Image (cartoon, rainbow, N blue to C red; front, side):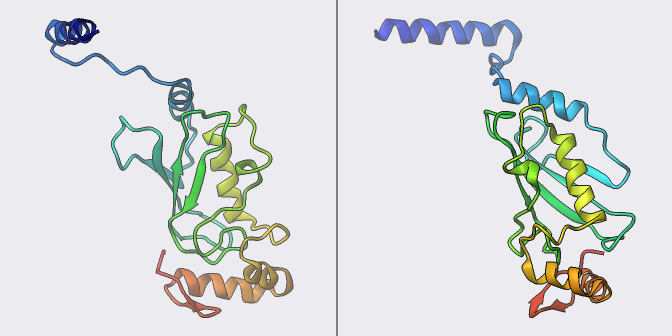
Length: 183
């Protein structure tokens, strides 16, 4: 048994000496699919992607969305993506790192987007999620809220909702909550 391990170690060393690098780690099917999704991203001019742990770690990245119209025009919103090894059979975990006054994003950054929950299907991609997130900023949905107070204001008084969004994005207080400046 011990000899088997020493043979494997010698094989590894031989492989390292052959090309000067350790053997390449095999990628999981999920990592391969994610690599394909990222290479096919169709980023709008208002969206950027960042890999905080370097491009060798594709399973964790950040997307920044800067809406150029609607209530959230001029704001900068950062979302963290955590992808599991079984992607695309499991939806990515997406959180908004920017505290935002929004009916579909709670104050902890949880995002209410149907394709991240019950409507996720393996045929969907990172691009699908980006379209969904962008659409949430263009047309917030008060009928499926995580922030019920914001949804109620949007439904009952859109003008006040607009004032609250501008105040929150400017670094003010809304409904007793402080929002850091994001414009």
